[in-house]
Image (cartoon, rainbow, N blue to C red; front, side, top):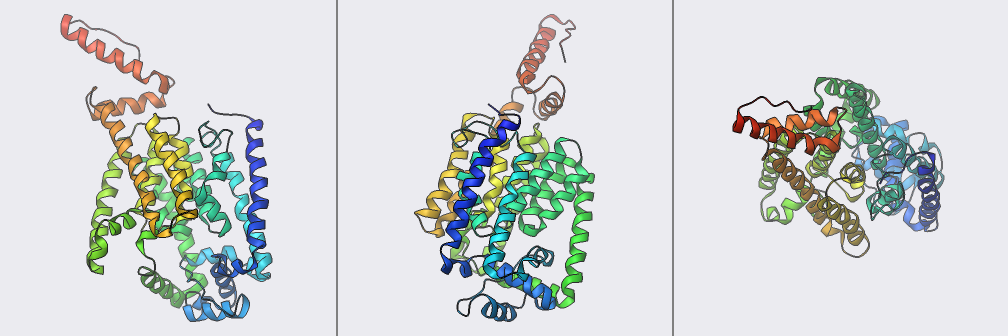
Length: 427
C-alpha cells in the first residue's frame, strides 16, 4: 500500500517536528557532550579553511584551534574529508560553537524533507516499520545518529534520492552530477557510481566526471599543493586508526572471520581481493537485473559493503535501498527488519565492537536478489529471458503482466513443437 497526495506528508512532517525538538534538546541539555561530538572537528576545519587552509589536515594545527576555541581538554578527531566539504562548515565557524552546532543541526535535519519529497513513493510503502508514510526515518538509528553527530550522511541520502529521481525520468547526465556531490563521502560515492555506470552508461559517467572535476579543482584551489598532500597523508594514517570491528561492511566482516590474525599487508591484500570479487559479482547482477529499482538498491547495498571506511551513521542510505525493495517477497521484509533492529540493539545495548554484524543482512540482500534472478532465468532460457523481463517492465504492460506474458510464451512454444503451427501471442 502506498500513500499519495499532500495528506501523505502530514505524518512525516509531524514526526519530523517532534524528533527535531527531541534530538536538539538531548544534545543541548548535556553541555559536556558537545565538545566530544563529531561537529567539533568539522567546526575546527571550518576555522582552518578560513584562516590557514594550507594546514587544513595538519593534526597539530587542528588540536591548537580545538583547544583555543572549543575545549582546552580532550583530543580533536582528525578531519578526513575532501577540502570542499569544509566549505559547508566555514560559514558556521563564524558563530560561537553552541550556536553553530544548533544551526547546522537544523539545516542537516531539514534535508530529510527534500529526501522524502524526491522519493515519496519509495518512502511511503506500508510495513511493520512504517505504518504511515515516511515514519521509517525516525525509527532508524543510523539516521538519528547521523543527525545528532551532524554527519553529512543525510546529504548523501539526499544526493542518492535526487539521482534516483533523475534516473527514473531518463536523465542520466543529471544523475551523474548529483552523485558527484556525494564525494563528501567518496568511499561510498565511488563504488556506487561505478555500479550505476555499468547500467546507465556514458551519460552518467560524463555527469559524474564533470562534477568531480569541478569539486577536485575547487579543493585544490582552497588548500594548494601542501593541503592536498596533507589530505593524502591523513588518509594513509587514518587507515589504521579505526578497529574494523566497528565497521558494518565487508572489511569488518573479513577482519572478524580471521584476517585479524594476519599481518597488515596480508589483511589489506585479502580485503582488496575479496572486495574486487564482490564488486565484479555485483556488477554482473546490476547489469542483468530487469528492474531499475532493484538495480539501484543493489548498487547502494554493495557500495556500503565495499566502502573501506564505514561507520554506523553511514548506513542512512539503507533507508532508500529498503524502500526500493519493500514491494518484493517476504524474505526481503525479514532482512529489512534486521537492518532496523540490529543497529538499535548494538547502539544501545551491546558494545560498538560488534557493528560488523550489520554487514550480514546487507549481504543477505545481495544473495536474495541473485537467487531471484536465477529463478526467473531458469525456466525461460537464461539471459534472454532477463532481457524480456526488462523490456516488459518498461512497457505499458507493466510489472503485473510479466508472469502472464511469459506463460503465454511458454505455452506457444509447446504448441509449436506439438502441432508445428505458428501461434501468435500478445506482446
